[in-house]
Length: 143
Image 1 (cartoon, rainbow, N blue to C red):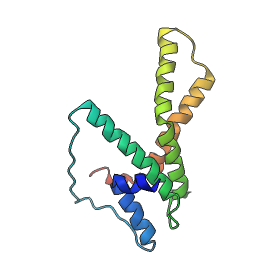
Image 2: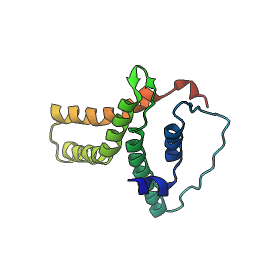
Image 3: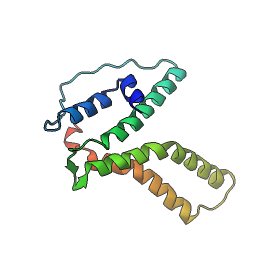
Image 4: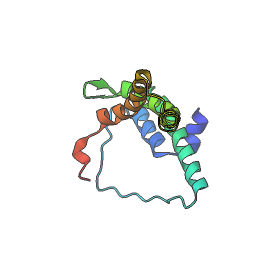
């Protein structure tokens, strides 16, 4: 676990280390900050980048659950949001497969969509959208 966190060298891990090392400090958004990225030029490089990002997201979310001093957002514990984000990260690939399989059965085979299918689909999408809605600061939309 720690090998993945330190070898990936992602900005998420650096932020987590700051939160763990200096619990009395606060992090803030700086809209004037400038960042550049190297855009993948082949599909294989893009897949490698996405795999690395998912790996770092998963490991960093696990590490964030151990940080002691976390604020609340919209009356919800930040640790609860992190746990929800962790679940969303884990179920996203399965959710996409589930959606495509249901489209196939409904459109190609002509089968009716069951209520259970719609409920499971709503939960899987909701788990992924809810962390975004709860932790978003809509004042930065203009940036």
